Length: 569
Image (cartoon, rainbow, N blue to C red):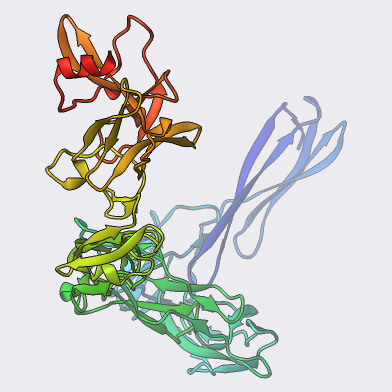
């Protein structure tokens, strides 16, 4: 039979699916394209019927490209089902089961329950049939078993012991453990820390888990012990219990501390250094700190005590101090400061005013000393006591001066004295015998009673005390001429002769200037123009002619203006 060969192109899409025992699948596809090489040609062939009633057409297409056999058939389709299968459920609701059916002639079919349905725990029969056929069918049984966790092999994992290879520990390798599951394939086994990890000296737990194909899991724990061998076990040196006092006004404070490891290994302290700590039970209980090497179970602990702010205490309270004079003007003391304590912030610092060292001279009599104690957080306490310096005449040297200026020191009570001075000396403001003239507060004392006596030169006067000590223009001290007391010169020495001249402003006599006869351009003056008690009397340049004398050169004298004028004349 000859037929003309038309031009044509056929395309087939081929899909392939692979399925394992637990129903997991993988798919792939490819395309087949057949194109006739020529639009002209002949098809030759014949048809025959076999004993099985199979109608076979055998054709050959002849084209310029060669010979192509052609076969065709027309027979009923058949269905091929999988065998019975067992599937493990992931939970009590059953399992999703997927299966595959094969048919001939690419006929359509249907299964009940369908592939991808949830099958309950137990046995379920699946019925599959070709659509439109009453005879072509197949069945198989799906068995869903309850969820069953994997089983480790061995069922109890063995502990592992190794020797340290350094002061830190060792790398430890343990067996690859396996597990089995009869329904969902080999489980996946994982351990933490994994094999060949670094383990520190001591005992470390290892946690292993096995998970099957549907998510059921089992766990086991074993222990890895690394022996110290020739290496000493590492230790931590922690502080002895720490005590701190709160800063006034605060409720907590930062506390830092030092922890020293015997080897260079990481460690952790809780709470860490630099944390805020608060009083526990009002300060009667500690904050507990725990330190340990990472991965170790050995703990090193200490306590941090935080106390409320409390002022220091003088213990015992300072007592009065009584001493005899050891200096001509009082006593120098070198005694310890009063003791103060603070139980929580360290020894307080104590400062006293006046100071209790050789930088201060305690005068005769009673002096109040106030001491202040300050603790480590600034809390303060104060205490006072008296220093009593008695018996001034017992000191060496004498408060009256050396023997060449003083005859005796005469006690007045326990704190005071008077002096009997040698000829040519008077008792000065400090109580000592002196030749120096100083400015003093006016009193009725005999040391301030002065006689103005006309000298041989009737224009000048000698100014003397009842003890026959007279003003004397003396030599310079610190480049400034001074006036001192000296015994009266019966011949009227020039340095004991003074001119007395009134200071008149607007017809009013303000006072008098005193001019030594032997230095007629100098006037008696209060040194530095000071108003202070005890300022020295010195000689200074007199005011120029026509100018008013400065106040420090003007003295009030118990004489009349007429008398003064007569004396000058």
